[in-house]
Image (cartoon, rainbow, N blue to C red; front, top):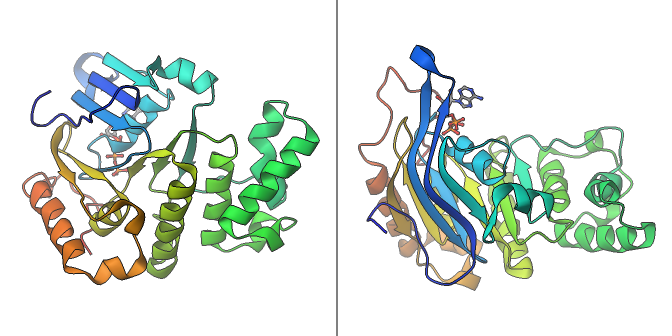
Length: 280
Ligand SMILES: Nc1ncnc2c1ncn2[C@@H]1O[C@H](COP(=O)(O)OP(=O)(O)OP(=O)(O)O)[C@@H](O)[C@H]1O
């Protein structure tokens, strides 16, 4: 393992990406989005991906989710090829847009993956009740998405991602569209949900404080072609990610360490966008 690969000790990894590259298109217009990515995520580990806009964070997540194929290298999820892990429903996915079906109630949205996999009605009802409890929306079971706030919709999307008890969650800026207060509440809830379910998480974000608050390790990527240029371990105590942590010196020190790792990897102005890394 070289100094920029992101590895963990232990046997079965939730995610193991080895030498992965991704080229979109071919010929003179070919675009190399990712190059020589080595990334390992341990079971129950929370890893964030951070880097300038367009550096390939979402592409890497899509490779792990088997929504796209690497042009080189390999992607394994729980020691299986990514495609097999997808067929085995080994992971749940939550993206920036909650993506709920507007004609289905909250309960029916959460139950959807179970229905698609022909789980019986009684078992579905039990599982949905558990999830509604977990996300604190029991009294909204019969509501429709347009009757919920953005943060509540995101919680429903996370419940739907968790409904099949995945050991891995793949999240692409799931709180990106939320206001700051709601976002922090959602982060607190995600910490709680992860400690209750033991799921590993790969989390894409533009926010350094968000990455630090949530993660065991923050993986820093370079501008296109995206490479891993640093891995910052966040040692803030596992079961101890509480709101007050955001005010503590250890938190600010970790934020500074990630900012330092990002130093020099920001996209030049010509390549930049309004969605660069946010260090607020
Ligand atoms: N399907 C595709 N076809 C062609 N190019 C693509 C495709 N998907 C992504 N790209 C390109 O790959 C590069 C990486 O995109 P990606 O969305 O992974 O970046 P990102 O780091 O997630 O960006 P952001 O932070 O802005 O969301 C970009 O230059 C993008 O234009």
